[in-house]
Length: 287
Image 1: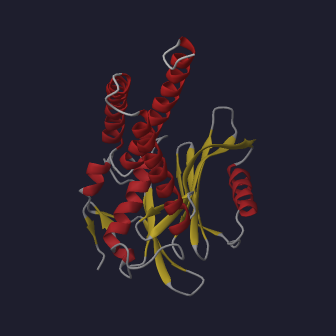
Image 2: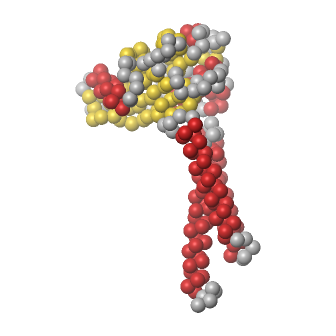
Image 3: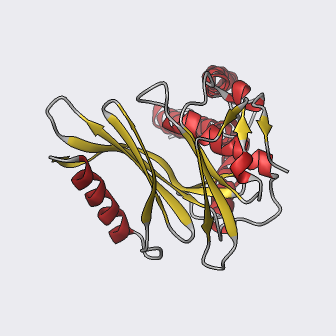
């Protein structure tokens, strides 16, 4: 059977389909990794849609070039391999050189697991029981810090936000009362303010701006008035104001080495919706 007979043509066609499928997947993965560094969700999603269309066009052009013997299929496979190495290398770098992949760095803080949205448990008869169960569950999952105490609470309608402070991190639980009279934990997050970052990586103002960004982008899903909060190492933390709004609550917290930090909360930051608004925030009171 010659190389131009139907059996070989079918085999070559299958190899080409697999090769270009891998090429397309790797191109999308590489593009997605690059686009993940863009702050604006709207811009990021728009660009990814454009990349999907561009990928389909590129695949069509390359397939015609390979079919017309103007381009070797090996070259396509080599490019796919290089993109695979680049993507995996970047992922391993982020995994092993910074912090666990579950952590999201925000200024001089690390948000462990970021904001987790979703109901926990099957519901409780009381708010306190619901919050206590959520804290106990978190303690079972957390190998290090065990000694947490409540440091601040916000009650607004059917929503309650409760903050617990430890010697290295802050836990926040979002508790909701549903129509069935049961309380649920509808969201939670953990901020680590000591031990996971190199200093001086960010200024105090950049850290506050990043904390606001985390609350706005990752937590504002259920109501329009989700509080913003964070931790600053600046000794003027109690005087912090954002867009002229003073912090509703500040508290000095100490890490396990005795260093002082300031936990702050602003219950209503006003009309801040996207990255552009966050970049324009006026942050005052810090040194």
